[in-house]
Image (cartoon, rainbow, N blue to C red; front, top):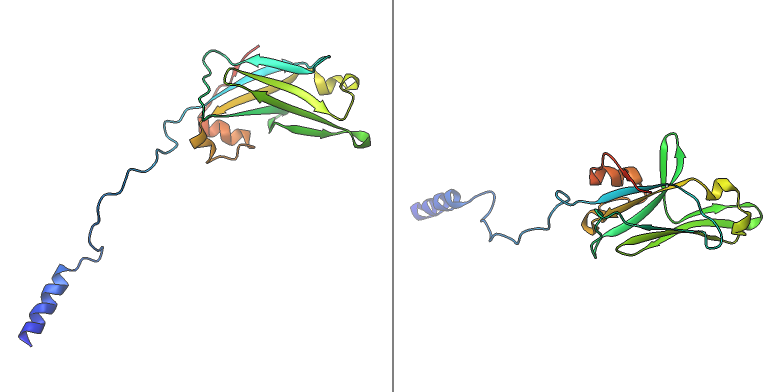
Length: 166
C-alpha cells in the first residue's frame, strides 16, 4: 500500500497540465507587415479612334515584381469617390455593351474599350475625362484582400496620398 501511495504521489507531482513540450516548429510565413505596394492615378484620359486605347508607362518609382498583382480601377463617381475594378461592363440599349478593360506588363499598362457597340458612336461621357487608378499589390497581401474593394486595398497598403501621373 505504501508503495502505491508513493507511486501516485510521484505521478501527480510529475504531471503538467500543459503536457510535455515538443520540439520547436519551423518559422511561419511572414505576415502582412512590411509588405509594400503602390498606387498611382491616371487622371482625365480620353479614348479616341482608331484604337480606343490609352497606353501608360509606369512611373519610374513603381516596381512590379514577378509575383505582384496589378489591378486597375475606374472612377465611377466623384462624390464620394467610388472606384470599380476593371474589367467593367456597361449595358447599353438594344443588347449592346461597352467594356472597359486593361492589360499590362512589368513596365506599362494599356487601358482599352471593347464591346458590341460602334465605338465611334459613343457618347463623350463614355470616352472622355475618365480617371483610372492602378494598384501594384504584393501577392502575399493580395491573398488576404477583397481586390474588388478599392478602399480595402488602399487601407491594406497604407496609402494616404495617390500620386497622379499624366
